[in-house]
Image 1: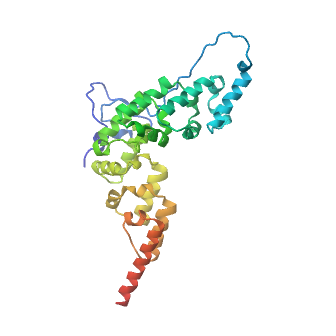
Image 2 (image 1 turned 180 degrees about the horizontal axis):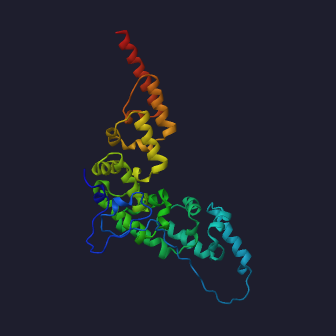
Image 3 (image 1 turned 90 degrees about the vertical axis):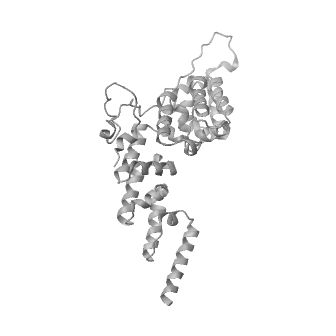
Length: 321
């Protein structure tokens, strides 16, 4: 079998000594044989907060600090943002001018993001309220448009699907992960799209490599794992502890499944173990029936029930004959 580690990380022309293993990788020995630059698993960039200088002006009714603060709170409410939560998670909001807050809104609007989506975005990442659009946001949009080649109308879909993109460092997180994914095979027909840009926020060594290694440890070859993740990119977003392990255990021990079937239908991991996989498998076993994973899971509840009835009728006809 091919050396799994040599497949997972590209070799670089580098005469320097191998760096120490990443503390986040569960199996550091698998990646020690490669000369590569260790990627930082936590690459959220520090947002640069806007500071303004003020000059003494004659007292005006609207210059009252309490009034200005209330105006900012009202502004948050118009965006459907919880002011208390925003203040707790981003204390810089208190001293940021309203004009600066609105500049962030204008930046997002310029990329086609509807105002109705701002509440969810800022609620998830309140630090965006006080960021500098020109140093923190526009570089990310430029990266998505030019490096990833996401068409302009689809940039908003990328952001709405994964607002975390807006708080990631281009140089330390997004660009290295894009390079890794392309070397893995996300090019051409399988290129990164607005549906898969959420993969870019994942740490290569802390998140992506351990998931690939887990699948290979099941007995799958590297090329087989690559084909699985290219067919079902969501595999790279699932938790090893909360998704992979319990579903693999149930598939192998309760369903007596074959790994070849997982290769054919990697989407198995995207279905709920408790609400769909166990329930449908139990109903099949109770009637003495069996279905391939794809036929058991892809259909709606109504279609699955119809399949059961049809299989029961065929079983009765066979007994009669």
